Image 1 (cartoon, rainbow, N blue to C red):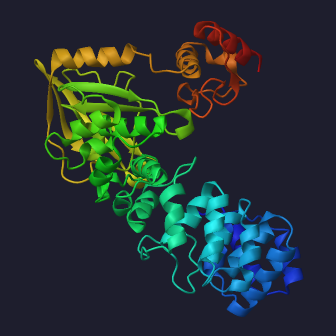
Image 2: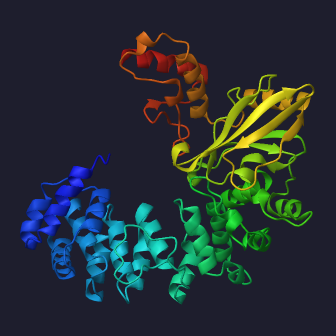
Image 3: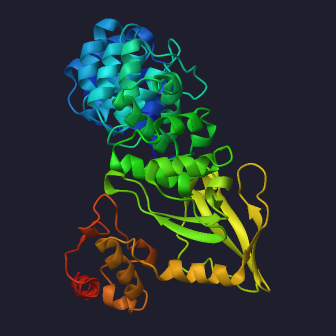
Length: 465
């Protein structure tokens, strides 16, 4: 059931009635107008193009409030002219109007410069939408909410290519598919024959964006990945980018590229001076820098190959250091990774773990992408030692993460009746990389005192709520 069905129907009824712009503005002020309601109503509206152009122009120039302005922009998609580009670009400087403005500008012949300015000066969803539309512009008259992956990837004009090659990945996340589009559209491999340091740094950021587990990763689908790695190894200067590239080669999706014999070790050495993981069963916790806004990942390696990256490209490894990797004589199915959109949408990766004498076996894979992985066999003594080490090694944690872990453990043993006003669940106590030292669950303050002392303080605080 669509929870916004009534809102969509109400907006569609107003639009299909084609009232005069001033009256339209009055009617819109009484409606709930989140972006998805506007998109859905416009897709189904039968309002004629002439009215859409007239009403849309009035709303973007005279409308008050986010909702009416966004409706005005949505009405202009596919019907606006180059004369509308300046005011549309100005409206798009603020969310939530930005993505609507980007779609309007993408449909106007001759408005590429305004769309580029929108991408350069905005952040978040506006920036991502604008970049996507610079690469895959809609067909004439297309009023679709999102750019379609089957739309043609077009070679950008010189000024767009130059900007994308240096600035596409900024301080915010760029989806893996868009990062791959950028690399292909600007012909990143050819650009790296030059000596522009800005292009080199951006190439590293694009590779990392393609390997981002916040969406389906694209690094393995980018034909130029190995070539770009070879071209920038030893040339990247940004410490965070350099560390990320090296870790991807060592334990991430870049480890699964079709490297020539010895090439992966050579690239890693050029990036960081490091070496590949040892054979056998290994567990590596990867913590990205806070500015990268990534996720802590528990990566399992079998003879130097990351298990999840080799079998699942649609999400992140789940929490694995809570005892679930321990092997016993009874087979146990373990979820290793889940798609960011949820298992019910794009699936999850499972394996069955069982001890067979002196061997631990991973078998009966489920949810994998591509051919089923082979059964993996590990020496039981080495396997047990590695699991025990990883479960007790908290050296990678930052202060708030340590407090959150200890607080979760205490809450699991405390009488729930003492926390009636705090609807806590064990799995809901967490902290976030973008605020690494300041908050647990974005609410509870953390300071420089010993973690155990802070847990007692927070428990006392929770009891008073």
